[in-house]
Image (tube, rainbow, N blue to C red; front, side, top):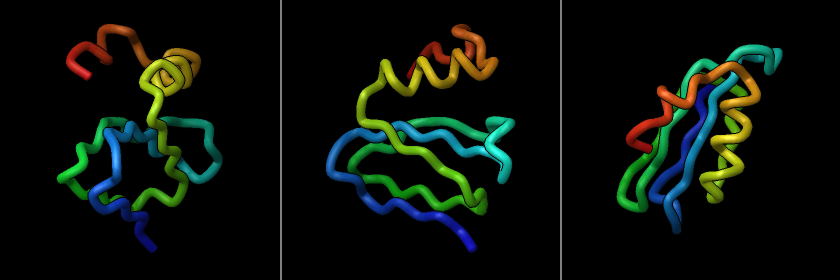
Length: 69
């Protein structure tokens, strides 16, 4: 089963996790004219960029990997 977010009302950041929420598998941002569809079952959505960044940094993603978001 896939997860899907179609044209969110505002800029939305997301994090995809493995099923045990122990490893981040993907992360990015979706604009209001875009659609996200992923086969990962566990997906968190954020409209607050700083919350999204905090979760990523607390789970081993380097601040260098966040440049450009």
